[in-house]
Image 1 (cartoon, helix red, strand yellow):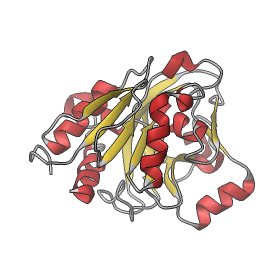
Image 2 (cartoon, rainbow, N blue to C red):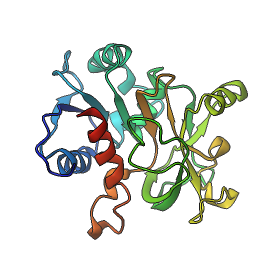
Image 3 (cartoon, one colour):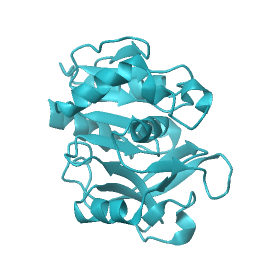
Image 4 (cartoon, rainbow, N blue to C red):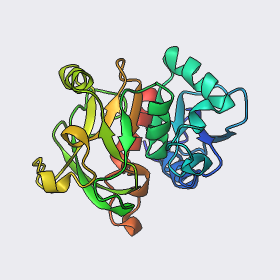
Length: 236
């Protein structure tokens, strides 16, 4: 699907402190052939969109809790309404944090077990490829993408974790290069090595790693290309 001039309409929501919106727009443009619309957090309305994306960064400086203030931005009321009506929503890194703070995904993101900001390549195992977001991969496939976060340790109560497992709502897990779930590879200490989750209808995805930064050989990996190509293909 790359660069085919898709008519798909994508809105990328920008908050004060966002810093990955350009990377995301570049990855989306590579997959669609068109630049997505950029929407400021204080806007009260979204343009007609086939996909809404919340990028990484440090919205509102990560004051209070990561994503807590952004979750109450004027635009988020519209994001919630669109999501409730079935429009797919993708939140990456800070976007994932915002989705949990907004109540659109369960659980929370806590400080990494090292209590340090971590920026490096990691490996992910694709847990469920039967979704619009993950259809570009094979179930159980291992991919290499970067992370860049301080508060990425996913946590939820045991009942929620069991529900995510039972309903196939775990999207990705941190793993070793061979796909094995090794505790040492779960660098941020996430519950059950969870790196990304879906909502109940699998139309909202939050993940901490950055597939948008693995779309060009110059960046060291192109494993993120299939993520965006598959998503665009599903929504064409």
